[in-house]
Length: 462
Ligand SMILES: Cc1cc2nc3c(=O)[nH]c(=O)nc-3n(C[C@H](O)[C@H](O)[C@H](O)COP(=O)(O)OP(=O)(O)OC[C@H]3O[C@@H](n4cnc5c(N)ncnc54)[C@H](O)[C@@H]3O)c2cc1C
Picture (cartoon, rainbow, N blue to C red):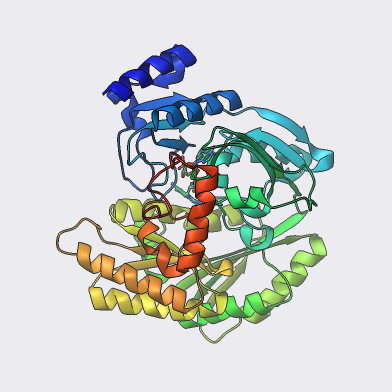
């Protein structure tokens, strides 16, 4: 109580009245994310500048309070949920564009800038920033950095980690850190930019980022393919990824996902289709036709049902509407689910899909698979309420087995959503004890008091 009294006092002394909340009713809405977990923070601070972040870290350090950075709360792993109370530092008001330099192909933005706003800003000069999560219109650059977010086109253009040149951030010691550079080449010391990216707010709070811009290709082609069996779809993905070209996207939807979409909004989808692929290629006029032809040959397998190249923007949009309606369909037809985003090397996708079918039968849990197949990143959705008294234990067991299989297939527990709370207890399955210990020692250097996003990534501190 005394600490909270001091916190309230300090907030009033250091921040404008409209820059913080301390009433529970106001703080409540800053305690959730898309994992649907929730916890009430003691205070919410709305940073408006780098200095506000420094002041907030100093305050939390002095009072030894947990400090959870927050973008727009669209993360799916509970990473932005203040499970130990303390202060939520919202970056939503830090949306300034600091510098836009098309000739140098970078843009410097504050951490609260929306991904979608960056894309809109740079598009008129023919540029884009590669990370393209489906949540782009309502997730922040800071959140993208913290989770190493990615999307369909990361197959060709990389994830956030490959597209940030440098950062300004504040460590748990309240020290300002400027790492990286304004150039695409830099060989000066350790790469702290890449270290902070994916650290889920546990090492430092990002205030600004230098984003690498890429030129928009002249043309893109979208291809839709249906298969009558899932093995053939898996084989087609492997064939396409063996070609000496890189599509910029290769999306996969399984039969259960197609069924949901059909029932929800697209009755026209072929009833006996067991899988749909969306492949996208980009380049110039000639190269996209050449790539599409190669893909057509690789995809022409015995159980091919339909192969369509979208000829107009409307056709492309129609294909993407099917893929995008999946989240909505899942949400309305199965409000409770466990959504995993495991990754395996592409050639092991068929084995992973067979295994999820086996798990589905073994535990009597419907499983829907879709995702960014070109990266081997499959969103495995177990349509079960994890808190259900009847099926909760089965779901946990199925998850354990799924992760074991993924690791046995040389895969990774998360491709883009991160670890957060949801997967922290499984991280030791993937990382050996020495690696985990070293990671925690690095954390101690950045944040000796352990105030930055405690309880995330690691199950327990060493
Ligand atoms: C419908 C939907 C679709 C999605 N699709 C994708 C997808 O295709 N690809 C993908 O990768 N993700 C996807 N996501 C997940 C999510 O949108 C991303 O992880 C996104 O990067 C989170 O951004 P945010 O601003 O909402 O961050 P939040 O959820 O607010 O925070 C996420 C993490 O970032 C930390 N953080 C936030 N700001 C900062 C900062 N300035 N400094 C340090 N740490 C910070 C938080 O502490 C937390 O650990 C999707 C989510 C939804 C709801």
